[in-house]
Image (cartoon, rainbow, N blue to C red; front, top):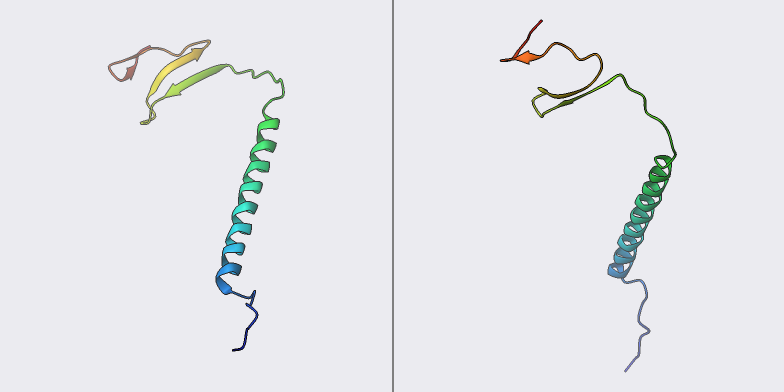
Amino acid sequence: MEHRKKSNNNPLIWILLGILFIWSAVLTYSYVTRSLLDTKNTTDKILKVRGLVVVNQNSIERVWIGAPLPEPIILGNRMP
């Protein structure tokens, strides 16, 4: 009986190692990218606007914040 040494070139192992490597690279990339984006938004900045309009999913104006306010909308029409 001849004893053969087991081959380390099993294709399934190499495929699984490749998938593991790609998965870890993607997770690392997403973590680093998220960390960099979060640090950009933590600086203290002042936002100045003249007004803010909140609209719904149909682009209908629901809330106006600002000055001067436009004429009111009554029954879908802007009144003077």
